[in-house]
Image (cartoon, rainbow, N blue to C red; front, side, top):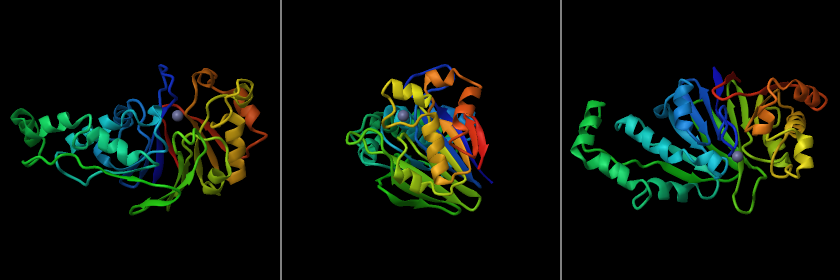
Length: 286
Ligand SMILES: [Zn+2]
């Protein structure tokens, strides 16, 4: 069975119920993670998953609402693994390798943390009590900058990327497609409706799409470029022939409109499929 988990369902604006972006997809006993926004590591555990279950992490882009919990995730996963399991594979657009090195490499911001855990006898004792065998090996995630095309594959999944349109040329953005025997899921990341994502999403079972606000409000505020809103997301899902549209990355103004009756009505003329306005920690079957 394949299912997705909305870990972070918000934006850079913190609210009581949403903050930042992060998603997981469970395929059999494997967990893929998409983005690592604020408190993603904690929300992963709240969702019933665990950092050591994740061997592959994909970044859509490097805005803080999508990557700020990366240091926490890397250190926590390494610490909790106690030397077991494989190194983490990390994929993302330009800057993924550089940020990884600057966070956790030799000379990186958190080197002092892992040096202390590797070398101090008190920390070594905790490690041994957790099941580890000395000497302790420093964290060594395998980060790779990737572009459009096939990115990675596993036992029952294959991930393909396509360019998304957000805040180029300052940051590159990618959308991802995960193909599994139980269905296909698109993680749009932050993007405006665009042909490359439409093409990537062709006939997918689920599109997990950003939705900043009501489309007409975004157009009135001139905030409709580089982002999807309600009817923009609906039209893109329709154009791609996607069966289910899961809205995430919802801004504070849109989030207040729960249970979203008016928005369902506004979107219905644009999209035939099922629409889900997601909440954080929601689990949705593909
Ligand atoms: Zn964002």
